[in-house]
Length: 368
Image (tube, one colour):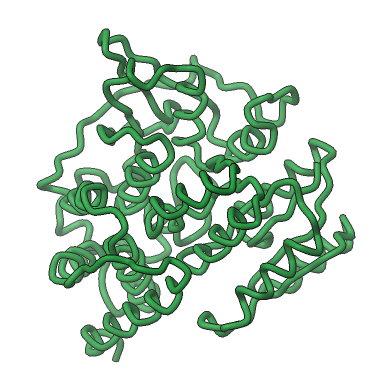
């Protein structure tokens, strides 16, 4: 099968290429941002026909036409979107509009424009397959289930190392502390999002748009052995477990859950002590944002959350704010922003640019 990977030099992108090689699929092209040495390694190893290096200018007007040309020329069967952050939204829109199946690792696409992406998907008669352990697990659990039988979805969080720590301790967490996840080998940004629970906020919204089920509950399971669960109307619960390896999720998306190769190691269930812990939304109020977004689709809410989170992470990275202030900044801006309806999804990059300008202006004193 012919595969195009967008964001190939990042953490998920590199793992995707490993899976593509193990499945003997063909990498017909890839895009990357600025990791030229890793891009050269991919070219030397696999000799793909088409390569796109994204400009350092994140508001580059040529990105859309470049992505369209890359898809048109490489002619993939499926496209993996592993681009990091809000920069990945346009790639998702273009992929589906080009009638290609979208294998989606870029959470922000669904956070910002989940309803619009589903409409494009429906009209183009294509599919969105998640690359995310929780949503891949949910997909596997409910793929042959009548949704009327489902009462509730469960997604798990590790809680990183910081779950239930007092605020006095949270303030002391450094950037280097936060990027080292206890269970997963992930990129820096998603590791911090995991520590702040913003990643789980994203995943609640993501699950809603993927499965069209509104009742979604996050719980802490510190070993990251159980990734998700389904509670049925008869009160039975099905849980999904696998080893902590994103390649299983990537493989499942690429094969559409027809996994025949043992790419990841078998889970040793005897080495795990599994315990579920409830998350207090008063202690972690960022979760309230997720359910506000679900109640108000097709608005700027998702874009605002993504933009303020990216801004806060950059401040934290540069020692301008402490760890605890990441969530405080997000909550302050999100709930005070005058949200509005998104009229034209194809102008989303312009909207994101404007939101980021508003954020930079409001919190300019923190950047000094």
